Amino acid sequence: MTTRRIRGIAAAAAMAGAVAGCSAPGDGGADGGASAESVVIGVPSEPDTLSPLLGYGKDGNSKIFDGLLARDADMKLKPALAKALPEVTDGGRTYTYTLRDGVKFSDGEPLTADDVVFTYDTVLDDGTNNTAKSELDAIKEVRADGDDKVVFTLDYPYAAFAARTVLPVVPEHVAGGQDPNTGSFNTKPIGTGPYVLTGWSKGEKLTFKANPDYWGGVPKVKKLTMAIIADDDVRATRLRSGDLDGATLPPNLAATFKNDDGRKTYRATSYDFRAVSLPTGNPVAGDTAIRRALDLAVDRQAMVDKILDGAGRPAYGPLPLDDPWYAEGIDRPQDLDEAENILDEAGWKTGEDGIRAKDGRPARFTLYYPSGDKVRQDHALAYASDAKKAGIDVEVESATWEVIEPRMKHDAVLAGFGSTGDPDFGLYTLLHSSLAGDGFNNMALYDNPAVDEALDTGRRSQDPKDREAAYDTLQRELVKNPGYTFLTHIDHMYVLADRWKDLTTQTEPHEHGFASGPWWNVEDWQPTA
Image (cartoon, rainbow, N blue to C red; front, top):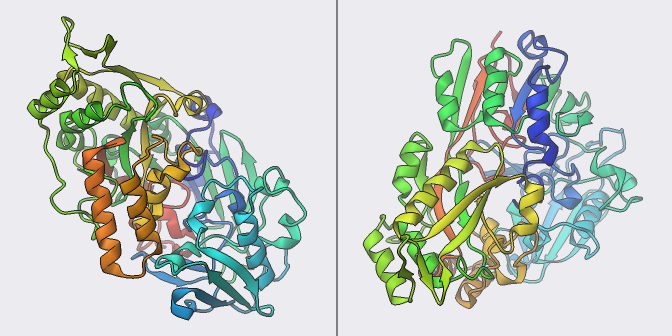
């Protein structure tokens, strides 16, 4: 949810997904199955915008754009629009990139250093509605040194800065004459990437064609269609009918394709977690004793086993168990006795109906989840069931994101977050008090000075030991006062027609569908025959 709609489901998508189930997203079912040159993928959501100036593609793998750097299959940084990794000087405060020769935008105009400067300056401008701009907080200045060199000067050494330069670069000669918030570039983008957008039917599909002048070589897949199908069951049905070549699916539905001839299932590990946001301003969900009790009441392993069919791990915080930054010893099993003790000591007493109350207020709050998302629905229902065992009444409701968003500051939400690359990525926007209530940033309006200090140290320090200590402190503070109930880290599941060679997946962030899955590098695919 680092950008508004990329993390959500468009209001029209649920209806459009069901309606579109009767017709192919491209040129009919044969569009996917007849040729290795055409691919139709079913994904659950669509972005609000295709402009990197507003956050699109900021974590890489955009099909329309390229960044200065990109990531390979092992998530290591590699040159993209830059010839090489940056030259780092001045104690980590200056990064210099030299641009690749001969790169052109899809309209034929050459890429220059001025385009890079324009991109970063516009993202950082106070008038640009990019809720992820805090991720570039370290930048003091960006300047061009001739046509082929870009120099970033930072206010402070930022250990993870190079990874932020996967941000897509946009053409100043097109986007520079428009309002970045409302201009046509948001829906009719021009980039240097392997594909060119040819059409966007909101709530239904986006179509792309291979860029014949792509600097990385012309893709073998000539046409790419991303069909927007919000409902998991509808997406699986369309895949089974042959209407789709591939799809993002929850684990239980992906498992139904396990023995299908001609299709292959892919499983990607991820930093993607499901959690319940507990807004600070809610008189029940914002109570520390309630938060701690809920943290102990949930059976995370049961959620992994029953909801995810084992395709995931329990989440005891925002970082997964196998992450090198994970704080050892914070794992905690379900403990209903301790949950009840915490509530008793805080004055939440059990009533005749089994629901606790304090000062006449019942321990009751509403938990929303987005319609059509079966995995979130199942998490929400399991969470409510566990909470009730401790005497907390969680009322589960489904709604579109248009309904949920205005309520996020006051009501709990079954949320999804998680970023790869560095603990600063994702944790800062999830927890820092300066971003409380800023769109999908810090949805819980969490305010913990010790966590803020840890986040600032982790972002600004170059010393790995200082950073490790800061993120260790942060994770332990979240156990003492969890602004979210972290539930599971989810493995992403994909099913795809088996017509291409040597496909891989990356370790993925929360965002997947467009930029992740086996099609993260569709421009490099080779047909099996």
